[in-house]
Amino acid sequence: MALETSPEQPTPVRTVLQLVGGWIAKLGRIWVEGQITELNRRGGTVYFTLRDPVANVSVRVTCPRAVCDNAGPAVIDGARVVVHAKPDFYINRGSFALSAFEIRPVGVGELLARLERLKQLLAAEGVFNAERKRPLPFLPGTIGLICGRDSAAERDVLENSRRRWPAVRFTVENTAVQGSYAVGEIIDALHRLDAAPDVEVIIIARGGGSLEDLLPFSDEALVRAVAAARTPVVSAIGHEQDTPLLDYVADVRASTPTDAAKKTVPDVREQLALIGQLRDRGRRCLSGRVEREIQWLTGMRSRPALADPAREIERQAEGVATLRDRSRRCLAAALDRAGDGLSHTRARLVALSPAATLERGYAIAQRPDESVVRAAADVRKDDELLVRFKDGRITVRVDAV
Image (tube, rainbow, N blue to C red; front, side):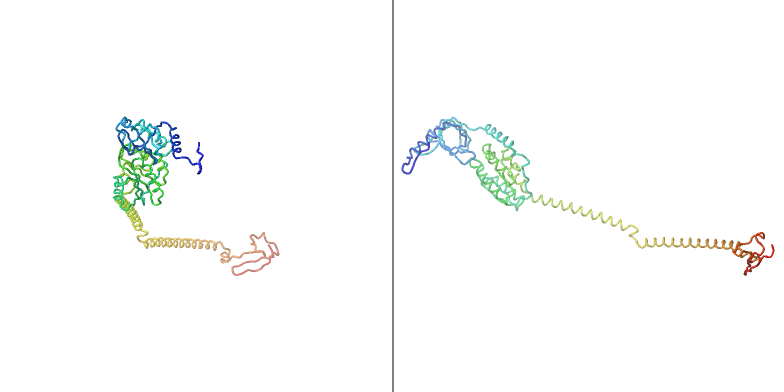
């Protein structure tokens, strides 16, 4: 129950500390997991700090020396352990600590089993899906690098990148890459680089190490932070055989820091050689096209119509002259034939004409209507007839038939 206090009726310190100690004592014995730091053996008692592997929090632990010795030589600084302890609150000093009764080192098999369960959980959520991975830019303007201070991984990435492309720029964030502070520092550095507008790629690099050394790069918080980053992330942790969970969530996985530099930065010599090859291909294609067009133009110019245009005109003129002569001959022949036919017709007409008969001394008797009298029986007495001669005609009356 809450204490009822006031400025007039304050609660003594001893009462508050006694109540706090009572509340803490109600927790009983519990199992706690963490990482050992600041291990110190003094007499028959062992003192160390148990740090959380993710958050930047810790608690002091005390235990008899025999408990620490029973755990074996694995109880050293940096070791992951599970401690069976009872929370204690020391009223005289107002401090909190755990009193350990048993210490168990976390074995490699158990760590691998935990990592496998976490891997399956994240895979089921789609964190490792290939669809969400982004391609790296061809030539990033600025590359963010997260690595240990003055580490071999930092030198490998910087030297190989500048050897491949001397103008490349880096923004380096030095953090802890193992231990209890590593996860928090790496996540903070990732957030800063991801928020920087000029950083186009982020490389997280670390050299080789044991499974325990690389555990921060399999931490769930770090994996989710990389998955949520807007900037493409390259994972370059350890050697080829090392596969922390960061490799599965990163957009590109590099086997080593040197390989990360090769995958992130193009080689200027290779690009210049590629440009030379493409330029040569373009020159060959253009030269071939020009040569084909020249050959086509030469072939067109070699044709008679283009080689001697006047000769074609002359040939056509000769054809026109030939046709004209033929037409003239045809027309003259037709006129000659028509003239001959006309002469023949005229001769026949003259031969058959009554005028020709009159020329020979004959006369033609006609009635007033100019019909020809063909027989004497056709004439009656007193009929008037016209007698036509070659040079005129006369009117006569019939006196007798």
